[in-house]
Image 1 (cartoon, rainbow, N blue to C red):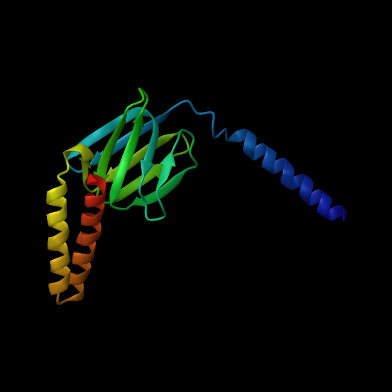
Image 2 (cartoon, rainbow, N blue to C red):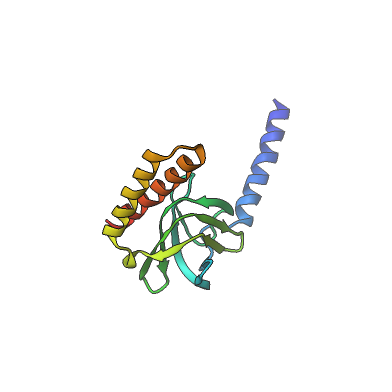
Length: 160
């Protein structure tokens, strides 16, 4: 019993210390760098929140978020700017890195403002991808068509 109390005291002391060291809700701002190969959308700009689609589930990032590394899936990234406005971007894939110092790096293979997307073109791309899958004869062609379908479906959803 004495061993259990000692272990409990040790654990509670470390838990209290860990909570005091990391003030999750105390960070006033978050610095975002968001880039694609052809453009830099945000370069170390202070923002309120970023919502990202990832293969482990969509999630929101606030200042002092727990450090994380995630792979982006096709979908919409929403940036909540400090002035209250929001900007939405479609990303095909990429990575997001959340650092302990409240900096976020979002690197996308492709990033396009949602308001520039054309729903009829997205639906046409989806139909083409589905017919490519139906006519695919090799495993590689099938895999490429399935990836194209996944991206096309996300594009259509982003347009709606």
